[in-house]
Amino acid sequence: MIGIGSPTFCESPFFETAESISEHFDLWEILSEGEDQLDRVREDIRRARTSLGLRFQVHAPLSDVNIGSVHEPMRLAAVNQVRETITACRDLDISLVTVHPGFVQGIAFLNRARALEKTKESLVEIDVLSREHGVDVAVENLPANINATCTTASELVEAVEGTGLGLCFDMGHANTANQLDQMLALVHRFKNVHLHNNEGQWDQHNTIEDGTADIEAVVAVLRRSYHGNMVIEATDLASGMRSDKTLKQMLR
Image (tube, rainbow, N blue to C red):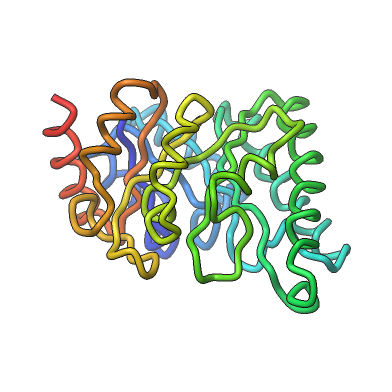
């Protein structure tokens, strides 16, 4: 199934956005922030599912959330944000949560490996939560040049080693890190896919054909080996609709 997600949706009333999305998509990946924080919109989600026929998956909060923090109180706070997201999804019968790995911040710049170690520690804890609540978690590869962990396929695999967590393949992020082929080699581990494009320098979130990432090669791999949802990460609904049209033509 093709869905859509956009941070801009967080700035509008939830049900109003749901009505607009439902005219063009059957699936919405909610970013649990702003107007769309799950604890605020539980009843709206249930109403949208019933009256609009929308399906949902969730992206855990992003702002100031760093599961790789080397400052333990902040790491624990970040894991707690993921815990609350997973618990809410269980209660709402939403089966998939996508999570960002950690970032290198503050004193971690003195030893960047510590941020990855803390990310791995957090993901072990998140794996336990995923199993306890019966909600799948997909860990996303991040873009280069933003002081992030898991910008490469090898580091992402290392981060989830020893857990049952899946991967979220982000095409645009992989393109900034020159990791498209390496990530696509892990397609059998994908539990979610984010599609958008860029010129390879920064995370622009262009429409899927507008950039240097080879969308035809990506779709060929996904068509052959992936059976989950594909989420168009768009700057707004209109650009998401343009990507949707292109993607559907490629999938024919």
